[in-house]
Length: 401
Image (cartoon, rainbow, N blue to C red; front, side, top):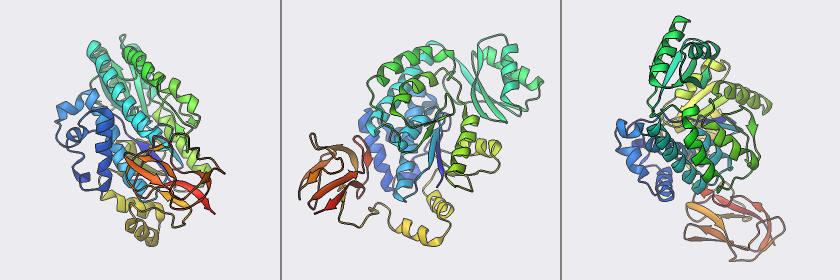
């Protein structure tokens, strides 16, 4: 199975949500809008390019859009062996891994965008892509610029992003061209992210992270800060706060993901980019020539993804014919009767061996009760508290009496 990767700010574009409005996964936008108390549908459908450049809008829109696509891919039964996300995309990866519940993830991303917007307004800065030379050369160019400019993203062997004061970034860019770089491209973002310019945002982010519940990840998430895989819930508070002022080590993360794919017997090294566009796929090709990156950005991409993952028409037909249905036919599975956020009933412990009677309320999905249709004992929970589940998704696995 593949590695899933999620893009960050700068990949957004006006109207990117329009192809998804008729898809069942569009309901994610409604849930996210409620959790954020924002009209995210407007951002995905009608916001202008200028509006989407604003950090508070760009991050929430990109994050939610990637979650829509993730939901659609999960409906096909395609699951990752490892995950990573670029900048705000790391939060999407954490939601996909189960390390962050849906509402917590939306809440933190909303606050992160507001905090970074405020920091950028107080201390304006810019970001520029330097193409055609390695990051060590770009770092030298930044030092020779003699100003507030730093390497912000190690995207690939051919692409590095610098950020900081506009004049210093311009000087560093010219130095990089003199040292062999081929091209400079401005990034459509509203600040100098992943540099010391985000110190105020980091302090504000720490406050909401302190009130956020993290869980152990179901699959490893490779972090931006250290390019190492993490599964422990206790790792992310520090990693996410450090991320704001630290460079994104994306090239190193790709190499790490490739290694994880090797150990999981994935000979093709399939990387699936879930989000607007295919900017991450380009960095993967540059960094890991043996990899096979593919992007899912519109519903038509789902057919191709299933073909690439399955490798045969039989699984493709099964997946496309069972979207939104539970994968288990056994009576031992309690499934969700609705889509929404799952919360277990207070006092009911879904641990192995716990007794359940016919009609026992396992939990709630929004305002809808999830009841067991039979009696038995719990074998294990299949949905986490705070997880956004789909209609027909397994909630608990029971041994019928």
